[in-house]
Length: 358
Image (cartoon, rainbow, N blue to C red; front, top):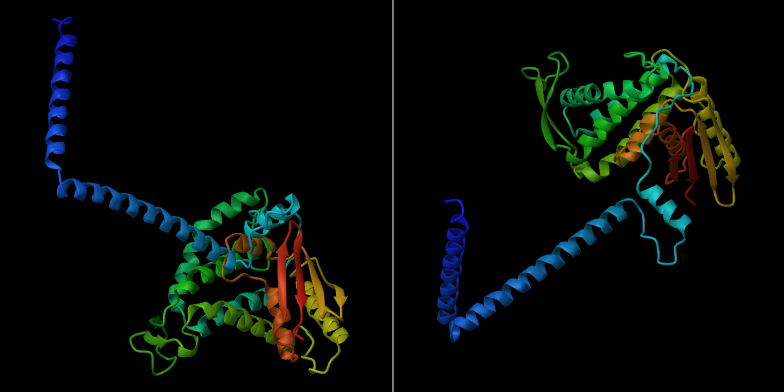
C-alpha cells in the first residue's frame, strides 16, 4: 500500500494540471476582440497605477525628508562634501544620546531652583494650551515612567528624590517638566475645562472653569517662541527684583545706548549670579567680537546638562536652556531684541554662540 501512494499523488497532480490548462484555454477563448483589448487595457492601467503609486511614495518620502531637514535648518551634504563635512552633518541631524553626568556638580540654592521651575510652569499656565490639572497629571506620569531608568543610569550615585537643590534630581525633574511641555504643546487646545478653587474668582463653578486661549496665539507653532521669552522674562525678573524673599543681585537692564562691552560685561554678571546659586561650576563670556556683534558663552557642569542633552536628542520643541532664556530676556529688556544663538552640548557642559541684531 505504501508503494502505491506516489503513483496516486502523481496521477492527482496530472489531473490538476490538465484542469488548470483547460481553464486557461477557456479564458483565452473568451477574451477576443474588444474583450481582449479591455483585458490588455486593464493590465496597462494596473501597471500605470502601480508606477504612479511608487512615484507618489518616493516623492512623499522626499517631501517628508525635505520638511524634516528644513525644520532642523539642515541641508543635505553636496557631492563634493568631505568625510568631515558628513560627520558634522550627521552629528547635527542625529545628536548622540545623552550620557550620565558622573562628575560632581554644585548644589543649587533652593530659591534659585524653585525660580527656574516655577517660571516655566507659570509660562505654561499663561499660554493656556492645556488645563494645568491635566498638565500636572501628564508631568507626574512621565516622571514616574522614567525615574527608575534614570536612577539605574546613575548607579551607584543616588538622586535625592524630592530635593530640587540636588543637581542629580534637579536635572531629572527639570527634564521631565520640559519633556511634558514639549509633548503637549504641539497638540495644544483652544478651549478646555480647568480645575479651580471656589474662592479664586466668580468664574469657578463646581471647581471647574472654562478657559479659552487668546485668539492672537491660536497657532500652536508660535507657542515655543512665546514660552522661551515668557520663561526668560520671569527668571530675569526674579533675579533682578527678588523672588520669595531672596535677593539675587542681578544687574538691571541697560539703556539701548549702552556699549557692546557693557552689554557683555552685564551678561557675565548674570552668569556669575547663576554660578553663585549652583547652576554651574563655571560660566563665562568669551570671544567677544564687537565688529561682528557676537560673543560666546561657555558653561561647565550645568545642573541641567543631562536633561538639556536629552531634550535636544529627542528634538523637543522646547528645551530647558535656562541661561539662554535669561540672556535673551536681559537683551530684550536692554533694548536689544532679535538676538540669535546656537547651542551645543558636550560631555562637560554647554557652548553658545550669540549674534546680536544690527
